[in-house]
Image (cartoon, rainbow, N blue to C red; front, side, top):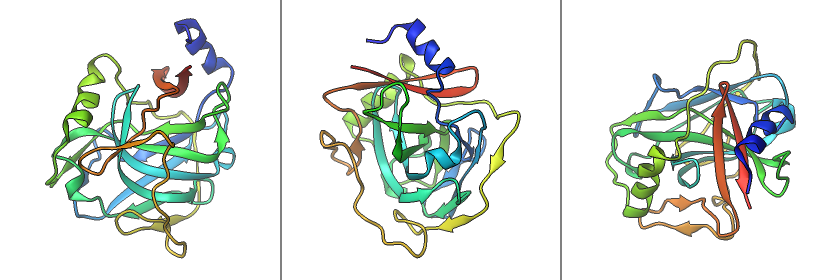
Length: 221
């Protein structure tokens, strides 16, 4: 198990996913059934967008230890060559509220401290309106866990570099011109009653810290 000192030391050893999400934010939300944009820039300071490379992007909810995939936005996008994604949020994935965040998972880059796990990047929590769904008891319990394991909220980088292209998707899918595949998830992933995919595993729990305005992901083995 990592101590607090070990978690802090990860910042000094480069265990950072520097995909800084500029939309959505705490003040920029989404509306179910209406076109929305996810955009990002390079936070600088390594690993770069080029290092992060191909990634999966989804709307999640939960807390620092347990996160549930509500909607797969794109299953493969290169964050170095694409700066934003347009898609339509599914109104049925949950209720109105600010319990949502974007998670970006690198397909090839591994966490430098725990290379058996992928590098991750997160948005701050944001509000979704025009929603028609509900959270089941399992997902709601994860959200309630925010009180002891909060997630989200990062400061804007002082300098940043953006990618040069954008991609459009409709619902869950991939950038135009590529074929969408089924949502990929850990082998121990369990499907909840509302179709959401829980990302908690039986072999490791994820501890996400926000320190000095940077999201760092470590793992408890």
